[in-house]
Image 1 (cartoon, rainbow, N blue to C red):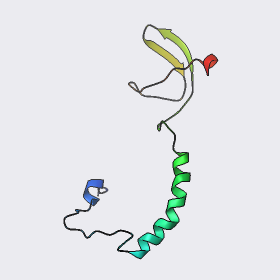
Image 2: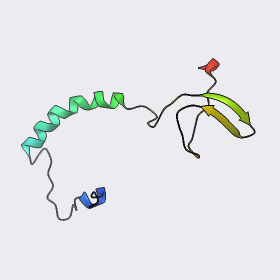
Image 3: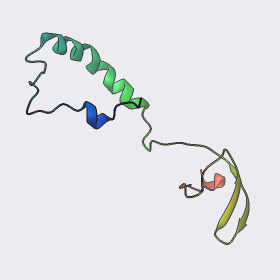
Length: 86
């Protein structure tokens, strides 16, 4: 059995009733608890989300760069920074 896809779980606005804080007091109460926490959560999201790792360039041959770092796949985007300029 496979897990349902997000599109399988989507509600159809034409057939589902609108539920919001105005029509359901429980939603309003839940939002009152969650809203103050959201700004703190957003502060923990990196400006450039994704995987970050550091390594050291060991050899450059033309456009091929060899580095010692955690495993990456061919085709992944890497930013090379000069540690003297950081």
